[in-house]
Figure 1 (cartoon, rainbow, N blue to C red):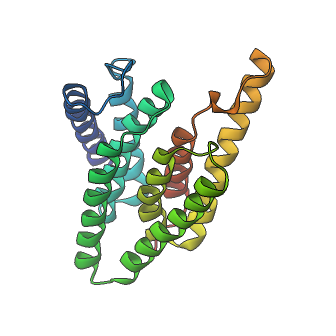
Figure 2 (cartoon, rainbow, N blue to C red; figure 1 turned 60 degrees about the vertical axis):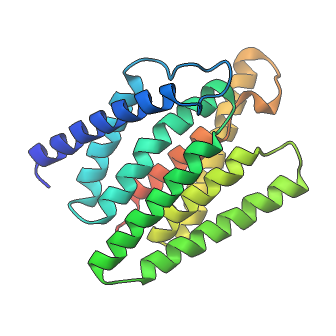
Length: 214
């Protein structure tokens, strides 16, 4: 893609992020005590940068729409979780349906169902992994993180099973590092001071940008 088309796709991300912000703030998706997505304009800028990075990295292929949607919903999900330690189910499930539909469209256009099959396997693998943690270690993992794993499993599974492992490890490593920094800077605090969701989203997105598209 040319620099102009990459920039235009970034502007598309800016518009989509603005629409999503308004829709989320006018709905009942935000948890109590988190009436607005803040800080203003930052989410739109981050989404626009993510759209441009995806356009530069992936190019004008059907996958771009699916991963751009992941970026569009991942940014507000990360912001909500960071501010309120909550991942709204009403936002995750519809986003997952749209993501699955976009990957289905990509498989149809590419005439290759194998990546779509991997995507489904990725969703099941991460659901099984996080489900085991959720039930075996009560209180260590939230239900929102479990539902988020299905969304990220769809995205990472499309790239390959190795992407699932790397994306998950990067996310957990980032959360552990942030917790360590907080404990050093603030003195010892409970582990829930650092929400897991934003780091899982960052880990998945970093793999999308760095792994070779095939």
